[in-house]
Length: 264
Image (cartoon, rainbow, N blue to C red; front, side):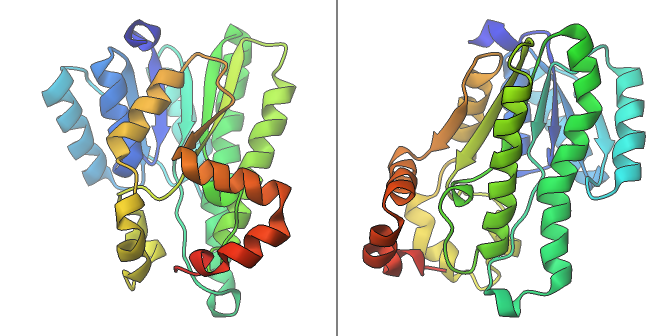
């Protein structure tokens, strides 16, 4: 697998922390050049320095707020002038706020869609022409198990991830006759700073801590799938089985697993 990405340019949004940063370090270890995108220049610089120190790979980085169409336009144009190719785009930027619908503000709802859905689509549109010209590439969208199985207090977050899965599946079919791969990543809870915003009370994080995924493990799974026809990465396996059961027997699952769903 390591030879698969060597010499490639891997563009990662939300690369200043969490699985974005872990993935950047992982692909650099395999000889690829990660291109880091995120809102915080300080954190981007720290991530780039860490990658350089550990792998001797110089990781270009650009400040990007995916909510801003102007930002996406400007930053991607600048990036395309400075790197020879975009071999992989990992749409990782995203966040969630866990609360009941009546308690969520419309601004919070709008921002989740702007980052998780419209930002992802905007970044994808910027790389597609180049990938189509070279007839190669890989678009990897970080969705969630929440995009398959919605639970209380994650209604809007789940809706954004349902949208990501719908977009990803359609895009894969649109690009069927090209050399471009499209993969959705559907993880369960990951031990990152995601919950600093999603779960400010800390209650949900404590309840699911023993089931949380390690970001380095998730990063390795994503890196392994690059330039393959992998349709989806579903983690952990037992949670994905629950999602499949729900799709087949939604009423029964809601009836008998309702208490587990209300962990937030």
